[in-house]
Length: 488
Image 1 (cartoon, rainbow, N blue to C red):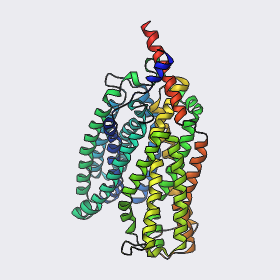
Image 2: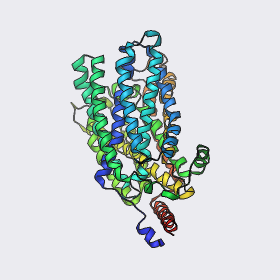
Image 3: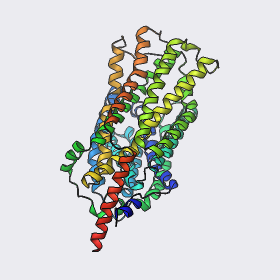
Image 4: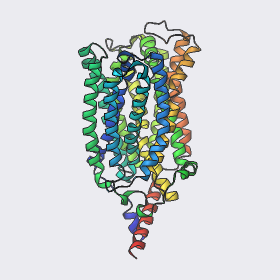
């Protein structure tokens, strides 16, 4: 095959609706993640385990989760079967998730008290393995789903839409249906919640398997038959040599740490409950910002389809910084307590606009990372001939999880410096200068530093639209030459 023919055949596209179906694989695991957000309530309220022990355990298990990622990534990269590379592991992961969640929520409290904690730890570890199998496939399979730079952002369009609907709708269901129905986080609540999660996640997984069915074949795995075999000892040299992946890890993990800090329970209390004086507004703003966030994400991804993922990520980071600066300036120049949905004046409208902008641009940069991981995997194939999407995706997750696990500690240490050593800030606390400064620093300052780190990292991230075109052309030429040599 000539160079011209290789260029013409360098892209293998997928139908948009199939990309949309495959994106449900991430939604399926997010359903389990949402259900597990309340596991501490089960562990302490139903199973009778101590609050301090469970809090420490959940942090430790997140670190364990990170260490399982590279191992499972290696399993994915070595897997080849007549059913493909990713489909079997998606199904296996979902079955493990369903089984472990049922056992965790229905059996743990029945175990003798002396063995209950060890049983809970063991089942939680199994849950993490299943979760990692399925989520790793979401990242790794991007490479086979499509290599067309105009198509890769489509995954994020579907994924961000599904997640906005899931997390907003699920939180409303918890607050408006489950808790009122059962009068709190009881065993019956967990039974019904996990039943819905298991059934819906299974349906989503089946649809995702169908979505990737035609692409989960060896001909779409890197260089196909020409791909270089990989051993576990090769991973360190690969990581040391893949500069784009290193820079993407820096960019995404610093953003993730900042967002994890903002998600700590004390932060909404500090911003909405103390600075603004209306804690209920924190929940309402989640609903109000859904549509603007999706609109900004769609516009950003439209730009990504034309100008590349890198340019959209960089633009989103700059605009997130601008939004933070404007929002801080605004809050410091008005009386924040005038912001209220019962008082539709300038302050309320301006806050909604600026807060929606901030959430939208941060959502764009966060959601665009998954297809960028696929670009890093293609770069590795282009550079070394190795097809290792599982390893690259899970190593990315490993570092991301380890870094973000420090969020709670950072918040605790910084609040302790202004006197909150025994208890966190509470709704109704007096707004002191220390609390004001710390709210600005934690809610806006650290995320801005994360955005700045992302922009610096992107200076050394070479995978723009032109480089990706070169990479796909080179991969197509190697595959074409291999096919000709095989025939000869």
